[in-house]
Length: 95
Length: 495
Image (cartoon, rainbow over all chains, first blue to last red; front, side, top):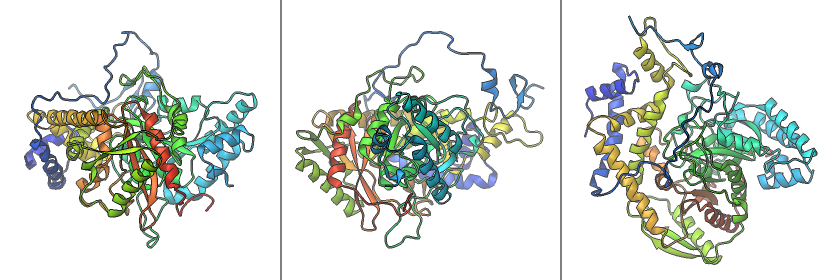
């Protein structure tokens, strides 16, 4: 599978990474290089194999559905690029 | 003896015996950093005043008869671990001014045990790389150089290149590191030191900037195997804040270093004999096996048939998880924000992420986004998860027959800073021997075992059963003892 320019543009949009027109061709070449190398996996017979999702053998633990912290608005907002009162500021979203 | 020449074990003994104070030990390391860090760039942030304050408090505690297992020991912390009140950048522009209000569990465990933090160690951006050349804070230089070509600056490996270079150059007694595909073991091997990636779940991931959550594990780098064992004991342990943290007891890893290898069965995977591996690495591997046989171990050829698919599998799984984890960097809640006049929210996201992430991180996010996208998920991501299961099954079967596996740590010695930079896949091949342990969740240790013809360090790797780091330490310490690795890097404190 080889990516065309339109697909590269679509992936970048999905990833929310701005690619300038002049950067598309290089991105396309690099991604196709990596995908071409990955293609060898299609040769492996994986019929009947259960996919391995996690890194550990231990099953995930349930935990009590309880509030464990709170009232730390200042800590949460401390690194905000545009703090407005107790809120994160963003460009106007609703007209 | 210069205080920076202590092993971590030796420093603990000297502190206990009152031969040196933590303030003296810390000052010596800060002086060494001031002298060498401008060249090596191993630290992004040096927290000198805070370190001296911690050292004074440590000396006071010791005087009162209260001393933790790492009381007064100066360490470097990879800049991927959140440290409360101290800049934590992950080597990225996007976190260039991020100061976490909380402490990672692993670094918190070290502070609990009395450690002193010298500063934050450099790394590849978001721990993505094998050369420490992708950091927004600039590349790290390996303190070693080729005997016949001392002017060519070499990479320390990555992604924990700053941690490994700092420890090798004696700018810290030990350091924290993380390993997603080889990021502890490859730089340890390139810098002539030891490093262990423990079993997945052994160390909490809470507060470590996430790259690929099912593969990421924290571990130590230090100049001896025993030093790694001492550090891992403090770093490890169950943490309810990480849902994948294993609720299992933490054994006395340092005691395991003295166990010996008599009667152990050591697996030698035939698929790790790769075409193009330099003959001196093949020879060192054989030498390592001979050392183990001489100490009473038996070596057994084993087969791990899916080995050759491990790297391409990794380059689906890791970018997929990264694309999801790194979605949080949106320019809204923390980190860099880039807008233009009239930017809407989407434009803010796209400009922030385009300018905040470096080329390799952008590449991996794009690959990860693609393999998870509608229509391609089954062909790539699901396929990779199945092959990952087969790789794990290979190990499960092998560990029915052997107690540990020994392989080379890396397919080459450290390379030049401008080498392997033109083709991402060429760079990825650095992790060919290490990535399998991440996919299977197993512990892997790199131990310095010899020098190549240019005088550069080469390492061997010991892979163990799940949660059997003790055998890994026993085998690693046996190799270390036989190798008697005493060579020193050219750039180091006190040289």
